[in-house]
Image (cartoon, rainbow, N blue to C red; front, side, top):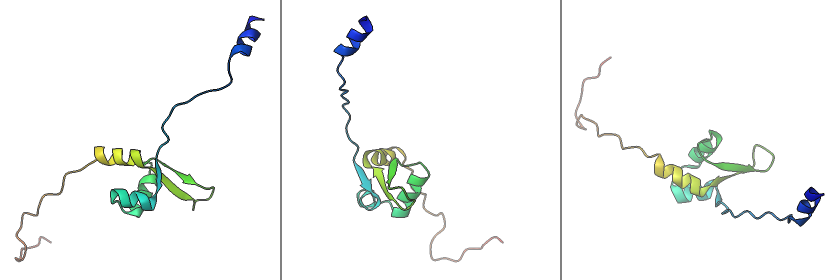
Length: 96
């Protein structure tokens, strides 16, 4: 009987306080980040970028989590390649 009284006194409402992520399509992600649309699509398909595909077909629209994408770009940066050691405009021997 105590279990029934306890269950009757509980409310059936569950409150979850979470921020809704900002989801953007590939074109808007391209405009914000400067990454090419094929690179964004590849990153989604490889699991590198967080997102969802809307619709049931393989042609559904891809929506990326913009906050996670920006966080990824801020943490996965590479240094620029060093400048070539040879001087431009001169003929150099080529090893065959």
